[in-house]
Amino acid sequence: MNGLVNYVSCALLWLGLAAKAPDLIRHRRDPYLRAICAVLGLAGLCFFLGAPPTVGAVNRLGGVPNLAAPLTYASITAYSAASQVLIVHWRGGPAVNRVARRWILVYTCVVAGIAATFALGDAPVERRTDFDTYYATTPFVAQMIVLYLVGHLAAAGVTTVSALRWARQVSGPLRVGLTVLGLGTLCSAGYSVSKLVAVIAQWTGRDWSVLVTGVSPGAAGLGALMMVAGVLIPLVGPRLAQWRRARRTYLRLAPLERALDDVLTRRSLRLPRPRFASSATRLMWRQTSIHNALSHLDTHLDPDLYGRTRRAALRETGDPDQAEAVAWAAIIAAAVRRDAVAPYATGHDPAGRTAVQVPGPDALVRVADALAGAVPLATAAEHGAAAPTGSR
Image 1: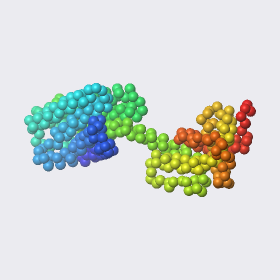
Image 2: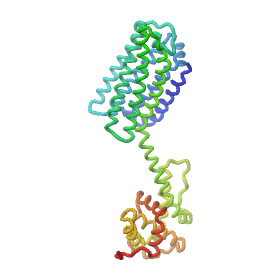
Image 3: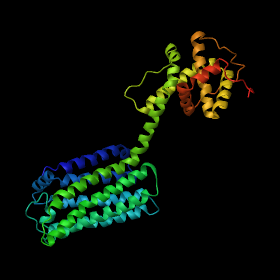
């Protein structure tokens, strides 16, 4: 009777709504975002209104026994309509708005039917948890119960089929999200099925109220959790992948920053380390520090050493990208030593040498990998151990 499952499910759904609220504020006219927020908000409202303590409070404040029942059923119907609209906008097509309006019209009629049948019926005894089976044989009230259950079951069925069918045509986070959403709506269909079975059993003189009080809330709660996950996975998945890429690149660049640490420290070229920053911000900080050091070492970078080392590494590995990374590792290590010994000497004529172009972001990662694992080859090349051009 404490409604814990309802309130936890409501909190999860409204937490998902809170996560999407900033996007909705920035893009108020996006029908797709409006549909997602409507699904999350209305699903949470269904659980909130269906909790026994909320049922008692609504009935008491409204002054009508079981007033919470049609309100809950209307919110379930509205949620069903929002689910259909979400699927319509998710799939897209030339007639999106027309199809969405049809679903809204159909379920508006269902809500009107719920209100009319409740007004025509008589439900004087408050039932907070077993309203469906207690009034399963009451004229008009029984029709109201069947109407909302069939409406919810139809929406859950269509959403399940549409989501799982579409999942086979896409890939990545969208496919995972659609699969989870389809399974979640299939699970939530257990809410309607269990209640319909209990109602039909009541018509035949059997008391299967446990399906209403025990099975249906559990199916609805699990379905809500999976539905939130299904909606958020396609939205969070790309951001999570971006975060993982940024963090992986940040960690892989550590050997290169360590190799340049002496220059960065002596020349005060390192920016203040960001605290409590995102992975992308920390990555930008490390890349900026590396570029500052490489810019300072520009006159110490030896193109001849670069060429010798690259040719030697290319003969060794057969991989141009790896050979370039090893060559850069060699000239960076040599430039750091030259800067420490003769900070203002170039070691060669900058005007007469061929410039070595600073590597791009992807190449910098390979240079860091080379510094971590291919330094012996770089050192050998620096001391002339690498074979000169044309020796093989």
